[in-house]
Length: 288
Image 1 (cartoon, rainbow, N blue to C red):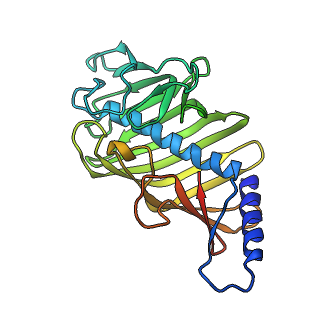
Image 2: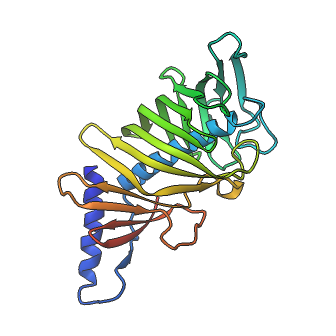
Image 3: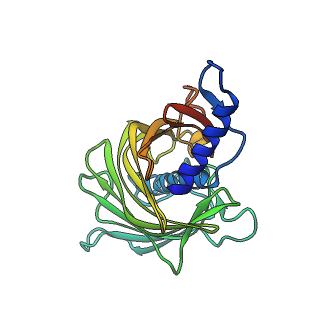
């Protein structure tokens, strides 16, 4: 996006100019924040965390029942609308996380994410079966919110999960409207999700990889990110909300410069929001 590009380049120009003549490592610590960079990376993590909660809910042999080790909050209300596959049109439930309420907004889930609002979940067959399709809807009337309890991203639209094999699910978004404070964006995405480590029922203690694309657009521009190396998430509860490793690349609008986002700049798979932004060979350490 244009603002992302401008802030990144301003940071690089100012800081590299101050270091002219130095021939040390080109790793640059950036003390300032870029609001639009933060929003873009935040949207990616909120989309993946929504996948997490739905996958956790549906990956048990006892479909849609909460488990002792689960990301789901204790206060979640599950409204069963269609409870059998035998009628030929699958199961349908509504998840109600409650209202935003006072600070911190929403309910604290076991992955240390806050969630509020409602989502509708429909699945045509158990998700363990080949070609099982799960669709998630977020309505404008009863939207869904996800965030850190202070900043909550509103989601309106749909996403879908399709079982391709025992270890692969495709995760797709055709059009998802997001609102965070004054920032409004549209997201489209298509990921292949591979199970690298199966920790048993639910998603807790699993390790997954995400390969594919995500497009983030606003009223003036769009930025398409592609995975160069798969994004890795490990769902041991202290780390479940973080992307531990992987790389995204994008072509910045107008300049044709390549931007890379490295989610493991220290090569330690740390549970944090620290990334390296690389533009034209220059690395900027950033916390989103």
